[in-house]
Image 1: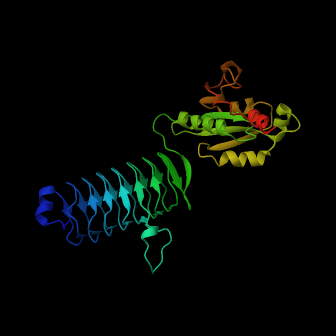
Image 2 (image 1 turned 90 degrees about the vertical axis):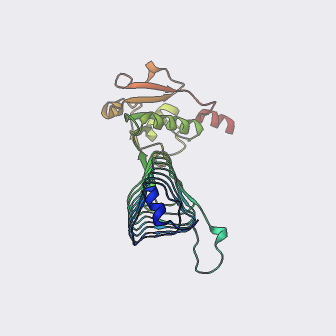
Length: 299
């Protein structure tokens, strides 16, 4: 598509600074492009966008409506932004996972998708091939190497999930157990906790080794509390793991005072420890997934 003419810009109420280089006419009404930016051939920019100073928009880059690309950011070919995406200053994207000065790189080319409403903080780098989910937030100075979940806050090098952003009234969720052999049922329960939290915190009370022995017998646990704690902390649905040494988490619940206590479907609400201090939710057991069932199958 040929470059935008001054007449076309006037008709569409588009502002292009005299020191910007724009090589496409595919620019939506109300968009503003500031000095020293380069918008390459084949790219397309939606309505009411702001392209700051010194921004590079590579060939065939697609930018939706209402996006803001701040100063000195680089969007290389293969990048696509849905509507209302915010790109902070000095953000860099890539499109080659193994860049070399020589040779054909077409077989290494990767695309990157920024979904609607996501935001990227200043001085971040987004490696190609990643999808940034709807309404997610990338903290300033982060290196994104993999997909980011919808409504997730990530930060760091490499960027890691910190918590989900609140979309309503955030809740403090508590669940507890031995979690000796993690299985599908555990993960679905923790996923349920995360959804209930609405952007709040999910805390897991974990029985200590001595507590598990009292409850399950001298042969348990199979995995130490250190190992079980590490495994739970590695799950994206969990914000914090707290080990308790008593047989029940009553004192821990009294200290934390969560909004909601979640337990598996093999419990009744009146049996839940701490039920008088918080709302109780029972998560229906998923199939026959349990540590006991797993051990029976092994035998």
